[in-house]
Image 1 (tube, one colour):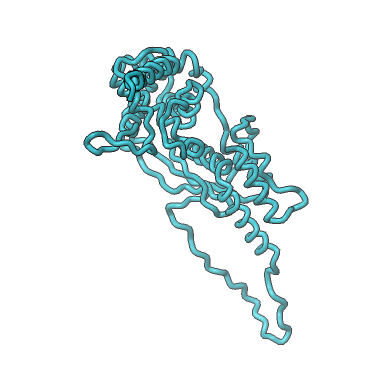
Image 2 (tube, helix red, strand yellow; image 1 turned 60 degrees about the vertical axis):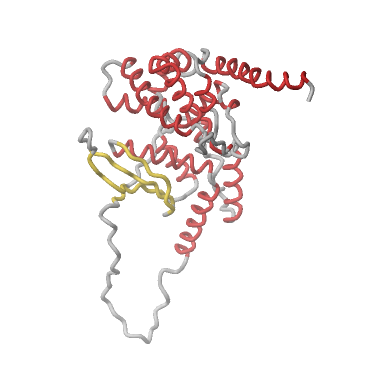
Length: 339
């Protein structure tokens, strides 16, 4: 090997590290002290890298640390920004700011997503990869520059440049109304069942868990300090599932088809004139629902806020009542386009 080749091989890691320094500055707005933390924050587990002791080397531990820090730092920021607001408002605002979708969008907007080192197989399918990397980055900032470093990053880079905290706090999307509207347009039956009610150990407040059922097909569940909050969270998660899982829509319309077939069948056979007639109507004994499942009647939907993310108007049945296969095909196509 020539001397020039050897020198080039030695210079390559330094050149790559210099490029990473510059990229991280563009993402965070400051230069790292110890770049090793940030290198690990960008390593997805799919690359299967291990250290000299044979232990996995990826960003999962930093992701855990960053998740805890985000709750603390964002909670601190929200507490200072909204003096006098009650605990429920503060909790809801913090949840919106640190949600997986929000973090994923931030990672993409900042340019962090393109720096993630992975096997390349999961980039297009793992919607959580970018959000996880953001949490890992926060963990790396904490180890490199402490709690104050994380606070400066969130205030100066995120909330000053990328997110309007007031708009996030006061934006209210009625997910329940949107899900009701979609169900009524497609003439499918929907209900909410309360699966559990308990008392929060820390606050002593009641906690409710509701689950959505569409044509008897289980949707997503949500937990909150009120029935309304729990149903909103369950509705939001179910809307996302409708957009992303064609199999879920398939199951719903299959169940609807089975139900409508049963409704169209004769309710009783033609009586035999020769048979002895009985004039006592016997009550059919039906099983009582489990006490843990309390059905709640669904009210008429309120006017829903226009939001592109949860616009399901393209997934619907036509007035001419197309075949089941046509409905499922149209629903699957629309769901795949939303990915």
